[in-house]
Length: 189
Image (cartoon, rainbow, N blue to C red; front, side):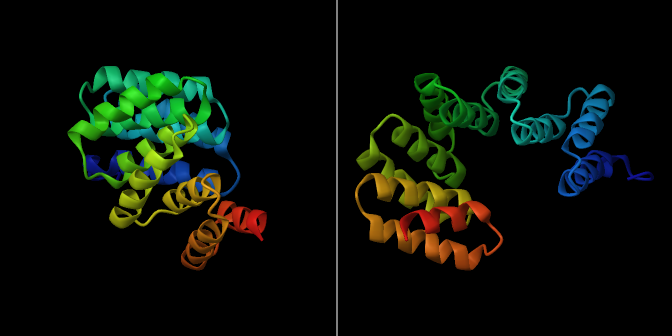
């Protein structure tokens, strides 16, 4: 990174992730904040800041950063989806979040991440039957423990406890270090 500037931002984000892994999430955020002053146009740093803020449970700050990313990158489905998902998952602004996710889905109808967000948004709105199809499609497109967590929750909400248990058990085998999957599996056993 010192000799090749194109890798500098990646190196900063990697260093921030290491700080977080070692229990210094505030140090990671400070590093990213400093880097954002040096590279104000870097969306990669913006997304990294969002993840750090989320991890520190600074939801309002995370949403503000996401709104800035959406404003700076109009039409970017990744930024639009991230803001929509955060609004659906962490606030009561479900309708605004759903609209943003719908916008992202129009642009990237086969994105596993956006399909997952749509399914989760519909679940949060109590539309579990509609949500199921989106989560099943997301699961076919990406391997992500978050998709398995969401799919299991929807199956559970549809009174399909055995199916939810199966989804979480298989996911726990693929992701043995995922504590959320372990907790959900214990919840249904």
